[in-house]
Image 1 (cartoon, rainbow, N blue to C red):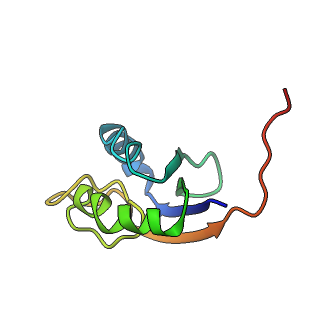
Image 2 (image 1 turned 90 degrees about the horizontal axis):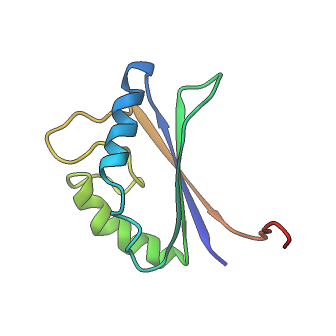
Amino acid sequence: MSVVKINVLEVPAEQREELERRFAGRAGMVESQDGFEWFELLRPVEGTDRYLVYTRWRSEEDYRRWAEGSMRQAHGGGNGSGGNGSGGAGRRPAATGSELWSLEVVRQAAPKG
């Protein structure tokens, strides 16, 4: 089964638009990676300043290959934490903190029909 990586980003209100702009500017970068299955940037609605960056991968090895290669380049040699929307070297990160959650897909379902 697939693996899921959720990067939990603490983003101050004044940086939200910048974070979203940076992710939009990188659209398409991860989609061509071998083993990539899904991406979502989830904006908080109420009660938190944490964005969730959700990616799903065919295997842990596929994720690691991306995290140690293309993702690090996109973040200007970042720390492999799964992305913070920093947009490359020389720019201040939009997030003030991040935490990476790693999960295995145990069971999944899709709509019937």
